[in-house]
Image 1 (cartoon, chains in turn cyan, purple):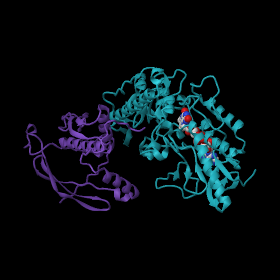
Image 2: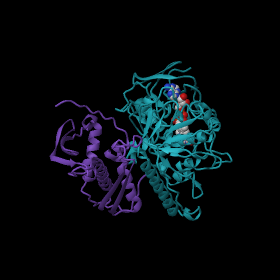
Image 3: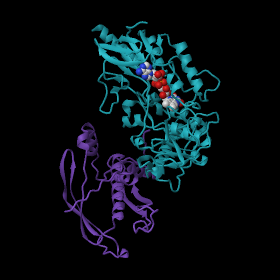
Image 4: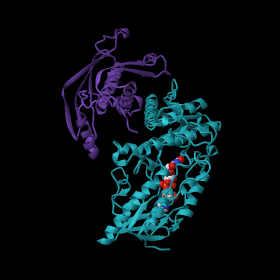
Amino acid sequence: MRRTTTAVIIGAGHAGLAMSRCLSERGIDHVLLERGEVANSWKRERWDSLRLLTPNWMSRLPGYQYQGSDPNGYRTLSQTIGFIERYAETMVSAPIYTHTQVRSVTRRDGGYAVVTNQGTFRCRAVVVASGACNIANVPACAEGLPSDLFTITSRAYRNPSTLPEGGVLVVGASSSGTQIADELQRSGRQVTLSVGEHLRAPRDYRGRDIQWWLDAAGVYDERFDEMENLSRARSLASIQLVGSPSRRTLDLNVLGERGVKLVGRLAGMRDGVALFSGSLANMCKLSDLKLERLLDRIDEYADRTGLASAVEPSHRFEPTRLPSNPPMSLDLRGGGEIKSVVWATGFRPDHSWIDVDVFDRRGRMRHDGGVVDAPGMYIMGLPVLRTRRSTFIDGAAADARALSAHMSAFLAVRQAA
Amino acid sequence: MTITTNNTNLNADNGVNVEALLGAREQLSGMPAAAQFKWRATCEWINGAHSRSTVQNYFGLGAEQSHRTKFTLDADHPELFAASDNGVTPPELALTALASCLTAGVASIAQMRKIQLHSVTATLEGDMDVLAILGADTDARNGFSNITVRFEIDADASEQEIEALVAQSQKRSAVFDIISNPTNINVEACKA
Ligand SMILES: Cc1cc2nc3c(=O)[nH]c(=O)nc-3n(C[C@H](O)[C@H](O)[C@H](O)COP(=O)(O)OP(=O)(O)OC[C@H]3O[C@@H](n4cnc5c(N)ncnc54)[C@H](O)[C@@H]3O)c2cc1C
């Protein structure tokens, strides 16, 4: 095992692998350190029925493009794992040290010391590609839940049999929350879905996948340094979407028809009773209005490019149907209808092992489009890192190209000095 | 996703100083302690259900602050409840607080979006089963079971843009949050 290299990449998900490919193309000597196995997050942190919500063609990586017969389909979990493993085998030549957990990164002699459970690595540059979803967010009020109530995060959830029989409160209505609510309701449980801010979208619009439109119309190419409100863009919840062979749409209307009860955002707990916000109508209105604007933008794009006549006609979707009297509270104490709670309230990265002064007041890493505020340190795989595409597998290629170019220049300057 | 509008007017003037607001956001983000405000009111009983509230001082930007003048607000119950009707009822005050907060939000968001407003009227209604406050129905809620707000807005903007203004103003409103979400309340009492 070589312990001194020019660069260390932490994490062998698609982002770290894409970066490795780009560094190799530039002749930058490096290793990858992975605490588990290649594609570890997909192997250990996703539910069984998950399919990608991005179509097969939309997983372009450096040197890789989907060649199969179903470009518009959606990979299952095992297909996703297989795809990333194959990318590692065929496209990555640098050594990948698996079962090697990074415990700390510190500055040392103008470079970095990367301490792992398999010893210490020394390098001049570090790429943090350890994922954006290491920790599941749970709201502070969760402390007030009755202690005997079964609770689980979307990260730990596998399938309905993970949960006890009986009613479920799913908190969070982005893509994870809506997919899990749908699956649990189908399993015969009565699901109550707590809905805060969310984004809805149809699976297909005018005969094309919504992701196709977002890609074509340039939405995913919006750059981080040209956004009016970058921190808001970075904290946006995922769009309510599911990948399925039937190309179905999954939104609050679909869930409502299926019998899922909608309540407002979980606002607090009092004596074992969950209290919901009265803002449900506005949350749904905001989401309906955002969808309108998105479809307007797509229509404008179709008109401008002459596509309009080649695709199905423009149309609009029914606004979100609101329950007439959503309950403002739900008794979670034993004996009530609710037997479990699923937190689908988003994720955050775990950077607690990085001992370098690169964090802001709220613990977020200070970086400029992935160039971290410490010489030779880079980060990959965060939402809207450099463009809106960065949030997806499809964004890693451009990000890795840009950041490997930056690293190459950084190393050259250091060499010259 | 960027908001594209055909109605933006660089000269739109709703009497809101957007630069000052954006400046404050910028500055306060850098010094979170200064952003900690305390809003205050005092209230004195007059007679029956009639009381008079006074608002003058508050705390913010790390120091004691004062309104330009001392404001008073009378509250009472109507004659229907055998009271003297010297002022609006406290639940009506809550409705006015919500209305004013949302309206101020509409004006400033319109200004940010460079939309000229001509008139904004909000009409509010709160449903209440008074058996609860009379102690005759312990299952009913004391407060409103539902509040409806209807905005009528004349502005140089499309229907969709107007709806978006109102939706965004709810998202940013203090009183909308106060009413729609639970708040912990500590009430102390002592002998004067
Ligand atoms: C539920 C869910 C669904 C998603 N669906 C899609 C989708 O449909 N389409 C899409 O394009 N994107 C999707 N994403 C977003 C994104 O593509 C995934 O989060 C993806 O896994 C991110 O890849 P990554 O390489 O950045 O991080 P990860 O895949 O998380 O890889 C990071 C790696 O770093 C390792 N690691 C972490 N800490 C350490 C350490 N200290 N030492 C050593 N190794 C470490 C981890 O074990 C992991 O293997 C989804 C995300 C989630 C959570």
